[in-house]
Length: 111
Length: 111
Image 1 (cartoon, each protein chain N blue to C red):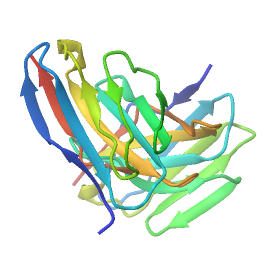
Image 2 (image 1 turned 30 degrees about the horizontal axis):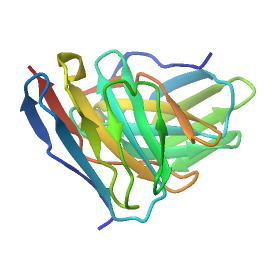
Image 3 (image 1 turned 60 degrees about the horizontal axis):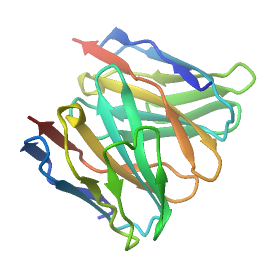
């Protein structure tokens, strides 16, 4: 089967660091995406990992371990505007370019 | 500006009244997809299209139709909407292995 697990909710304080974990069990793997989605809005792309290791992009970093079926998104210097849902998605590839989506982690940043 | 547009953004309709949600992208992407997003169920793919005149079912295609007569447009058709199709709908497009760009969403209510 295809399965992606993320925590449902997390809370953090403005200025702090938070790590959102994602574990996956899929029939194939051609990369892992992280998207940010504010309430009622469209998901927007944050990062893409296809090889093991850490990808850094400003305040956001994403890590992948293919052998462990594990990824995390690290958000530094949290701001109030980072309050959103964070979606993990695995690209399993194939002719249909299938993406398997997690249910998302709702992050609340408090002052 | 590179974008995916959807219309209408909000729609309230009644059971059985045929409707079409339009989707257009200006990035010359081959791949387009329709999702619905419901609380607790996450993003679920309805239909996708690999290119002009090439469409296929996603995970929840029942009650929906699509067409891809031009590369830029990918309308979603509900021939006889029912209340269980009340949802937030997103159109998305991408090149081969790249991130998906999402439209702003269409919030549909079927009474």
